[in-house]
Length: 211
Image 1 (cartoon, helix red, strand yellow):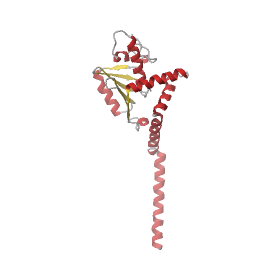
Image 2 (tube, helix red, strand yellow; image 1 turned 30 degrees about the vertical axis):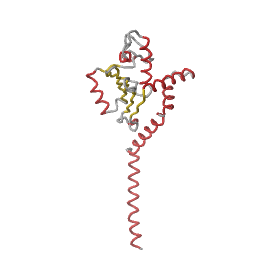
Image 3 (cartoon, one colour; image 1 turned 120 degrees about the vertical axis):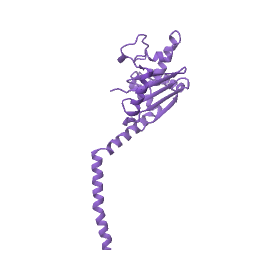
Image 4 (cartoon, rainbow, N blue to C red; image 1 turned 135 degrees about the vertical axis):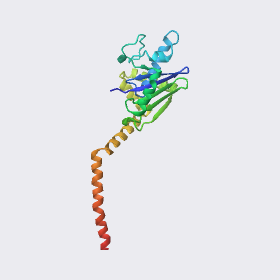
């Protein structure tokens, strides 16, 4: 099981979609875009970001010849397959997020799949790409200064700095409450409460008669 997401990259009037098995989080979209933009500066011919996305490995390096899919961060989704991914996202929880990186409009949009109980209350968020990239730059500087290289540790710092930690905790609390309300234990407590009310009602009526 991964953290599965679809990425929609918009640039130069075109949309390119990618599947990322470990891409459903708030940091990866801007981090991968930052890495791709840095690589773009170094490659001859100014290749499209979509091309670079298709050649990023998990370390953010550029692999001219793609490694096996399990070693690459993105797998390109062919245009004719996008509809199937849209249906999967809309009807189930196999895809946790749908992420849009609109370079022309300077928008990064994070949509959390409401079909996933742990994200049901999250909704969607938008951030200006230029501001997001600056946040990533500062995060990487902070990580380098403090010896933090593990992605999950950087993600925790990022969540804390953006306020998403609280949002995610609230969403998980909502999930746990929903799970409890649907549980046999909750149904048993409701049943006991109804029985208690039924036992109290005749006694109350008897008191009225005695008065």
